[in-house]
Image 1 (tube, rainbow, N blue to C red):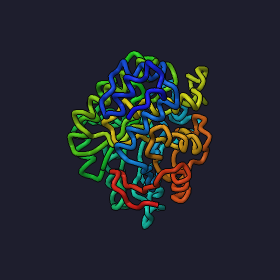
Image 2: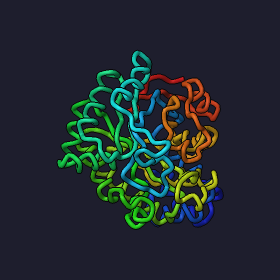
Image 3: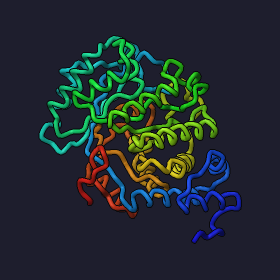
Length: 367
């Protein structure tokens, strides 16, 4: 029974919908952004997360490989990109990539996450050999690799449809793709912050094709820069619509814009309270996506723990100091790594049940 006294008058009709398991509309979502308090959002977001996952919070044993930060795109929010030959740039050879993976042979790693810049000169056989070699070295590990942006540019360079690229990489061991490159799915915003990137519709189309091959993906939203609440709602609506069709998104990850060392830095960063409000609203609106991730290398460990009280049910994984994307943009964890014990303690001390998972959210062990 809804206690109306807990909610302000304008939020009561939306709260009724959420607590009855009904879908909220775009105008409802805008009202939440503009008028709902953080406590109100916490109650509603947790009602949705508990319908999906009860008190469970998930994490996995994973590491990242970032083949290059040399990129044809010049996104204004990016602190990671370098020009070829510029100080701080890197471009790993296949042997260097396989040397990284070799460190995890015969260990309990269940996922390798591969993402990086869109290199101007790598031919498709570089990516074929990369995925095939990783699968051979780590046959027990799920390979989650390449954003829609990377895949589309591979197809352009190869001169074939992106479906052919996806099918070939799947044959070689690709299991899913990450959700990066979505930024804000509004082309007027993309023209400002990432003008060289694929359009909103192409991003959605690539993920739809991934899902049609039986592979899942994640979805993201980069928030807290030049976008409006209306842009966020449009973004979330398009993701929800595609999920209605394919049911292929495993998780949604709201990604906080970090302001260090990039062209949008003058805009500053949102306060933690706004991060939590946004995460909760995403959980409420995306009621057809099973998991909402608090990506701890981006939010930090303490804020990610707080996020568990506002709808998040996943913390990502161990990471093992293998990603530089957010540390180069000013995130607090400069060498991001957590042990399984530390991840489990974060969940348990916040009142949740820690669950180790694989990349497809199959449970491995409760702690």
